[in-house]
Image (cartoon, rainbow, N blue to C red; front, side, top):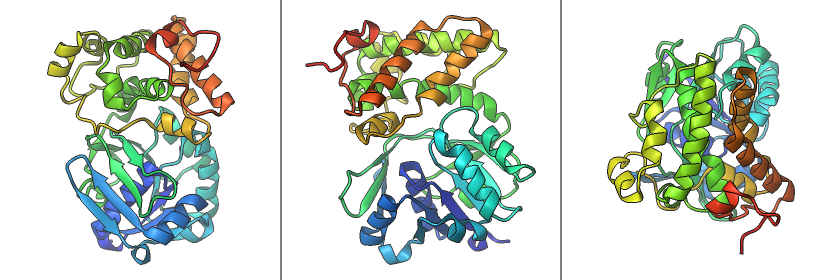
Length: 347
């Protein structure tokens, strides 16, 4: 079957899903967006605007989009299903795919965390499930802004597990570069190291570029990564390179003075000035975060390995407190994260 004849379903069309689906639709792929009602209404009213760090800015009119909230409508026609829901919804999505999708549909997890492809496999039996990794950040426009805009605010190539000939040529389109990789577990562990920063953006409320440019925040990130690498080493896990760096060098680079970090880490800082993290967006919208699949994965590994992880534990506790209060980002300073005060919000 030619690429133009294959139907792709984006299972969970939020920020990443709308960006991926938008790029694929603009390239002429047959795409259905399976979305929540808020996204469906926005897309039907104003269409989808897809932009990126390189300056592309394209709009798909509402009538040119195929969008639904009904899995029984979307999934039966899928040849390829890109799962882009948050980690907490993985098992529910697996149940929907099992109930409605064809047995020969290829399922690709494009989610944060380490275990989502395994969770999908556990729920889908003998179906083909491939792990994937999205390295970039996507920012969604505020509620009510039309057309709905999804902006890729950093760069990188999507990695997809080897296992289906032709998948890279189907999914790799303008604005959404894709490569196959044979060691996806190493890639996912490497991505997790940098994803430990998502919580710092959420707690600070700062744009990602501003937060990374501040050594005080980088010291906290470096501390988390040190704890993660210790647990990984004790468990025999070798994470893949991050932004071209060996993982063991990453804490050293993060601890450099600001002027030297900016000079040496240009690739890491190639970020739209307004980009934040999905965890920040979750706090702002009063939704559960993925803390249990990011910092939580390190805490579970450290417990099994018998290695300490006090910094990761502290960050986890602060994010969980912010989740429970449902007041958005607490706007903490680095000093408050290192030694949390009795009161949550900074003044």
